[in-house]
Structure formats: C-alpha cells, structure tokens
Length: 361
Ligand SMILES: Cc1cc2nc3c(=O)[nH]c(=O)nc-3n(C[C@H](O)[C@H](O)[C@H](O)COP(=O)(O)OP(=O)(O)OC[C@H]3O[C@@H](n4cnc5c(N)ncnc54)[C@H](O)[C@@H]3O)c2cc1C
Image (cartoon, rainbow, N blue to C red; front, side):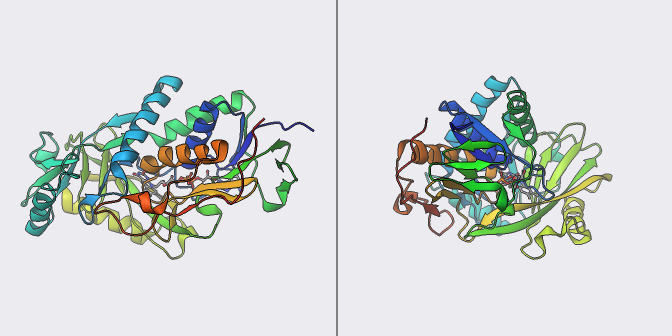
C-alpha cells in the first residue's frame, strides 16, 4: 500500500505548527493530529520573544542565531498566510534595585549582549507613568508573536486540504510497520511527536504556568515590559501578565495562588484602576537541562519538544535542524558547538540518530 503522506505529526501547538510549515516548505505532504487537550501551552503563551535571560541579564542560549532564524521564519509565514503574526517590539526592564541597574550597566560592556540591550529612557507614554526609582533598561531586539493566529491560520489551511484531524492519538492507535507508521487512517514513512508536555519522553519536565489578563485603564503603554513578570500590551489598555512557574500538580489548572501572585505583580506596578478580565494556565514542556529535545527516537519516529518558556524563539531553529537531520541525514548540532557564552549552563539536549534517515517518497 502506498503511504497517504510523507510525514505524520502528533500535536499542533507551537512545535507541530512550525515543524509542519518547515516540512511542507521542503515539499512534504504532512498529516497533523491534534485533540485540543486541556492544558496545552501554546494557547495561553503570551508570545513574548526575548533574547535575554532576565534573571541574570545574560544572553539566552544561542539567542542571536535563534532570533535571526525566528524573525525570518515568522515574516515569511505572514506573507504566506497574509496575516499579521510577528511584531518587533522593544521591551523595558524596570530595575527592582540599584544593584540590578548596576548589573545592566556592566553587561552593556559585553560586546555580545550590548547589541541586544540599551539604556533607558524609552519614550512610551505608559511606561513614563510607572514608578521606577532605579530606572529601566531596554531590550532592543525583543518582539511579539501572535501564536494563536499562527496556529489557526495553518490549521484552516490544513483542514481545507484534508490534512488535519482532531482525533486524539492513543498509543494503541499507532501501528508500526517495517517501512513506516500508520495512525488512524493515515500512514507515512515518518512520525514526529510534537505533543508538548502530554507525552513524557525522557528528559521532558512539565511546568505549569499561570497568567492573567487585566485592563489598566489610563495606562496607555505600547511597549513590552518586564518587572517580575512580562506585560504584553494588547490594545485598549488591556494587558496580558505572565507567568508563574510550578513543578508540582501541574495538571491542576488555574489556582487562586497563581492568580494572586500575578495580581500582586500588577498592583506593585500600577496604582490606578485594575480590572481582572481573565485568568489562564497551561503546561510548558520544559526539560531537565532547559534545552530543546529533538531527534529520532526510533527508526521511523522522531520528537520535537522541550521548548520550555521560549517556544516562539526556539521552534524555527529546532524545526530547521530536525528537518535537515531527518530528510538529509545531517547531524544535529553537537553539544560542543552550543557556544552559549554567558548563557544558561548545561548541554544541548539533542539525540543524534543512530539510524539512517528514511527515504522520502
Ligand atoms: C502561561 C505560559 C506562558 C508562556 N509564555 C510564553 C511566551 O511569552 N513566549 C514563548 O515563547 N513561550 C511562552 N510559553 C511557552 C510556550 O507556550 C511553549 O514553549 C510552547 O507553546 C510549547 O509548544 P508545544 O507545541 O511543544 O506544546 P503544546 O502547545 O502543549 O502543544 C501540544 C499539542 O499536542 C496536542 N496533543 C498532545 N498529545 C496528543 C495526542 N496524543 N493526540 C492528539 N493531540 C495531542 C495537544 O492538544 C496540544 O495542542 C508560555 C507557556 C505558558 C504555560
């Protein structure tokens, strides 16, 4: 029997969408399954694309390379789908202490990071209304991705082509044959799991995140902001604030504690009227070493997961490398080449394949 497709993807969040686009761009016929499970991360993600690790004011892992690939990928996607998805938007980092302000100045002397950050003041009418006794710095190369719109646009196209199914895929629905894989009525030489935190592959660590949507009437801020949490302007004085990190009881959904924590952050920031509009939660597919997880897990199956809290920045880079590996047999980037100067420590969690790439029809 001929295969119905060249590749099957399970999961249509950030990882599945970006990988699907990458594979289709290389001429593959792709079938996607997604069951819209409770707790999926991409539907609640704020969409912030930030090359800086705010905790320590260092460049995030491979940030320059990831950012260049992500920007080009999302711009291309906008043209293809004729939808606004990607907005370069600078971010203000309000310093909580004099020490943080001094560290920022110190980091600005590092030639690698100083292309990404600058000194305030940023001229934004809303930002100027917020208390900032120690001032603020600026992340110059940040941006915002409309993740929901991206997934919806691709899903509509896949549906119209009969390449999307909202059936859940249980383990018993996956039939492994000598030359390929069948899932429900579809078959392909290759299956890629993009199931986020729902499939606990070795190394995946589920991390719950909660956030809120509020109206801060009269603030009028247009830039991204970080002050204990990220603040994303959504127009009409509506802001998304996020998010928390919890490693226990991750599938419990929204909690009063999470809501309170986020409200506290907002109240410390803005003394004006705050109207709570929404409260949301999702489970990030984190990883033990905070690196993405990609590669083949058997001859005919591969994974792309572990995007953690930086899915929008990481996904295009991961998808490109995984496609190179699966289709052209290129090795995945070696740990030694991680070259993350000053970034988070730890290795690159990639699983180079022990098998030759399957021939694509
Ligand atoms: C509160 C919060 C805020 C965040 N903010 C940001 C941010 O500002 N910027 C950023 O870059 N990242 C952010 N993230 C992280 C980002 O959401 C993740 O990195 C990314 O969305 C992970 O995408 P994914 O596709 O791997 O997983 P998911 O989005 O969880 O997608 C997995 C999909 O697979 C489907 N699925 C799973 N198993 C099956 C099955 N067996 N059959 C059928 N379907 C299945 C699920 O329904 C789901 O749709 C945030 C995360 C959270 C929780």
